[in-house]
Image (cartoon, rainbow, N blue to C red; front, top):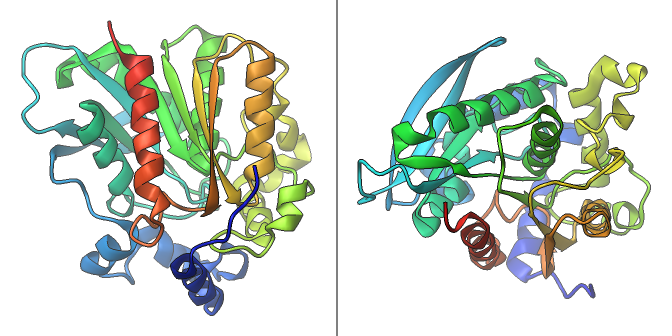
Amino acid sequence: MTPTPIPARVRAWGWFMDRFRSMHIATMSPTDIEHNQTMRAIPAPVRRVVFGARDSRVQVRDLSIATSHGRLALRVYRPRGARTGAADLPIAVYFHGGGWTLFGGLDVCDWLPSRVAAELGAVVVAVDYRLAPQHPYPAAVDDCIAAVSWASEHAEEFGASPARLAVFGDSAGGNLSAVVALHARDSGGPPIRAQGLIYPVTDTTLDDESMHENARKPVLHRADMDAFFRYYLGASREDGADDDPSVSPLRASSLADLPPALVQVSAHDVLRDQALAYAARLEAEGTPVDVHSYADAPHGWVTYPQIMRVSRRASADLVTFLRRELSGS
């Protein structure tokens, strides 16, 4: 993939982010992190302008489910006008990005799951998993596994078929999608038909080519990834968490017999090379994989769809992939 220049408006956004300590996890104070997790400092109209608005073509239901670790908040999106009584819609579970640490609450993450639900004609379940540093690894993994099991068991209540189940997510959410797919394979279910991995974290390495080449590119810096891993993994690193496939799916002993994957890669992203390495291993080990590379994009097109025009094109590619893999019963 040969990168092309980052659009001027995206470079300007990166410049703006770099001016403020509270815009990068590497320089955030504990108070900054808390404010980000609650989004208290950002009025709702501003959130919608920056992070994108919910698609008006969906109906939304907020609920919480019981897990072995307490209540877990979910948001269920369903296309308006979808016929009732027939449990035949696809169902997809969405895990948001933010380095397992940021973007608490589901309001800031409305844009992509609502758009997928509307465009695909599917039920989408967004997961408000627990965040580090208050809830370090494996809290997010446990919550996401519980949410997928719940979605499979309750799909028919929302007019969806558990036989047409997918997972998708961006960045840390892409990591969690890959981890959940591995867990489902190794634990005997639930059966997942497709995994959408949007610029996913697949390893804890900070030393590949893209980590250095894109270390200070807009939105996500190499220093941010170091901070995210420190907050997320905490003391578990002393017990070898970096090598655990539920942290670094690239280090799994086998990537065979997994659901077909879409791996979406941003050329100007520190995560580019590890995402491509994961896609290469999937293909080499017999798991069907599509790779879509966006030559002018840095990290974060899901987070900032109003700023990055690639967002519409890339989300359309995701919907096309999910439609193909989830077609039929």
